[in-house]
Amino acid sequence: MEYVEVARSDSERGELVLRERRPGAADRRGGPTVLELRANGVFVMDTAEHASEQALADAALGAVAEPRRVLVGGLGLGFTLQRVLGDRRVEHVDVVEIEPALVEWMRGGTIAHGPQLLADDRVRVVVADIATAVTEAGSASYDVVLLDVDNGPDQLVHTANAVIYGEPFLRAVLDRLNAGGALVVWSAERSPTLVDTLRAVFDRVEERDHAVRLQDRDEHYWLYAAHRSASA
Image (cartoon, rainbow, N blue to C red; front, side, top):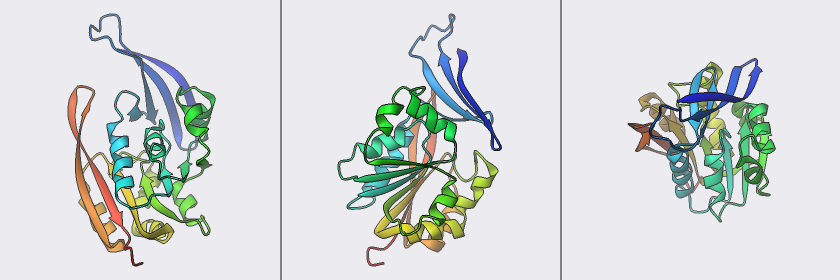
């Protein structure tokens, strides 16, 4: 397998690298070129396997009756957003992404499907930290909030992200949810601590095991859905 760097950004948070993963001359499997996103050397996601992003969106959209207004924490390579936009019930999506370079790569076509995705008139991209965006959102409210900014609370892309799995931030999310709304969080590992924290804040919490095939191996990811009462 050969790797070719496509784009790089360096900030106070460290390095963000987009690279192509290409079958090498000795790789008999062949296959298409894959885009891979890494933050500070940690694999975040790629274009070869995005079933977990789709599952996150499906779980969130299925958790409420009318997901008209959606907040997506983390743009990534856009697959969660793409799935959300595929639901005709969705009228507006705010996407909060802390890395301006990633937004530029999407808008400018470095990530090929990016320009069309962000051109959807239902989408508004906010370049900010998700914790700041939620707490300073004024009167904004949502039917669904999706968090996909890390590999879960135990595999943080940036250590500062630990705050978004804590009770103060989760209460801020609850305040932004309409009655009957839901927060859905993706994690690469099971997190009993997150379950306990969610249960301290929300009316009902569900934990779901999601099996996926990733780079020729079987993995199990976890989805956490936290609901606000419809009578709230």
